[in-house]
Image (cartoon, rainbow, N blue to C red; front, top):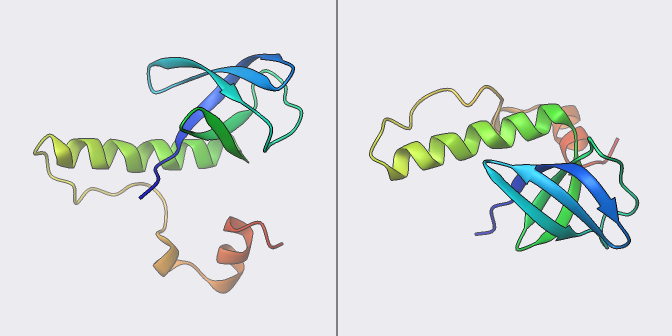
Length: 101
């Protein structure tokens, strides 16, 4: 399973961006997402920006990652992540989530 980490762009350079997220600062490759500005949000996996996301989606992913981390540390993982799982979404919500407006 691949798990992306939401990161916010702090600086850009040709083909790369410096990003911060979940207590880390990384230089990531941006070939898949195009030009960026400081403040943009990305979903990063293995040093590559895989997808542009907005602040709301970044918060959702961070909430889900917090639940996973808590479960790995032995805490109750039945808490509310603060967003609907795909199985609870309408067809319209799924289209928006997958970028098929």
